[in-house]
Length: 271
Ligand SMILES: [Zn+2]
Image (tube, rainbow, N blue to C red; front, side):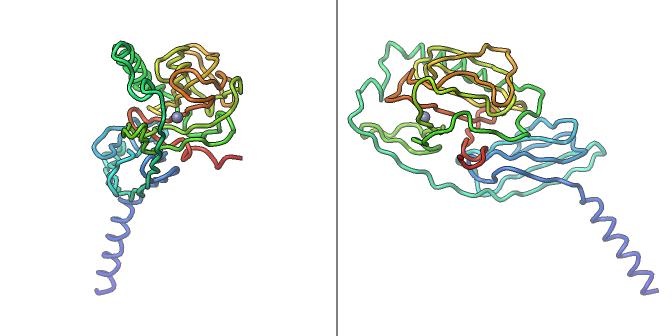
């Protein structure tokens, strides 16, 4: 009798365990500014902190972690059979660098009023390019360096220019001479290709699918067109010093929609 009860209890426990035993795996960085790729076979939809994410037919989805994200992210995954599971993921904090730069020309710190309308128009263009999402999981194969060189600026640093706090530096700066080839770090569709934006000069935005985009700024040459598909390693442009800059470098940013991702967290350490 006891034995029968124990067997029934065991069956119940196993049954309960089976109901929760949905394979889900993560790759990427569970840290502020990180990009996380999840694989949940059978998943149909998911939300991260209440925000819906697109789930690929094979159960792959991706989400970014905001630079000011709380210490825990709440992930809810819904499966085709109606099963739903919540995961609480620990999010590591980042400590951001503070950079002071003095003696800059005032127009570099505060754009003249005459260009405000231009800046607003260009910001809208960039925001729209980052809302695109190709129905491709090109992001899932990982990212290569678009150009290899000295890192002259890191993601998330709080910049104080001429004593005035500015918005954080949401990119990775790689200093290389003008003309150095810039290559696509992963397959993508080009969603923006502009030769002269006010802040970022020659600018390209690549859509790697499901809201993952990457941006290349200050280019001396923009070698692609909107709508074009580029392959990993294919040259898209060249390093330059266009826009508001003090010297030639690539300003590289990665986004998950409007969430800023640290490019250094999506690539292998620099060779
Ligand atoms: Zn930069």
